[in-house]
Image (cartoon, rainbow, N blue to C red; front, side, top):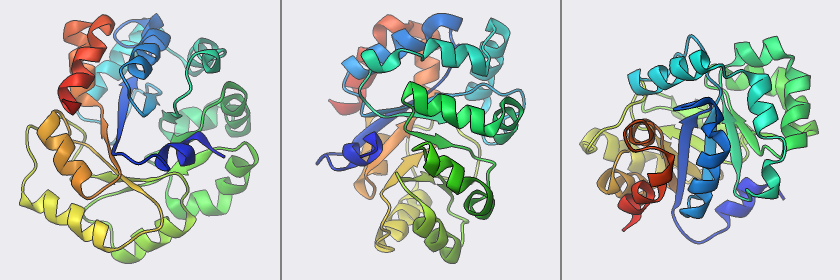
Length: 254
């Protein structure tokens, strides 16, 4: 069974953390993963830095730019993660854009993910129908789940289709804007969370974009199975460093 499915069988709200590989320093990837697991995080999304990220807000764009300047590449990330499953047992998801994966060679990329023990991919610019027609067979062959994003503007028919072809979880974007930490969610977002919950989808939903503290984490998880925190964590890393990760995680859950 895929580690993502195993994780969703656990009876609690899940906390997933996103960070850009190669940020703040090139060789921080493994120490960050070890610290996150030790702090009790349920799942981690590792961002593949890209020079032209569409959905990323200023914090993640900045971290991505810094990671590229530090020398992060797809090959270097794979070499960092080569023996990661000796120490890390929680689900690991790679999040990145389609272009760098295609340049690397999509089958070669999937093969490498399987060898390392990556559980799934999030590719924001891969449309669900293109995935279904052109990539699904390949991803299935290498045991990789592919998670899709929905927004408040996604039509119900599209959400139902995504639910039908999805495995793992559906990434529920809290608003139609780019990523970024917010201190609170308004009524619009809460209504959206409730609307999706009332659709009774088969695939679990996890909320991302705009979660930065305990209040936004609890609001996001009231109507979903979990939440993803990216920008707020990246800012914290920039200011406090890898050694203080447990403090950040504790502030969300206690």
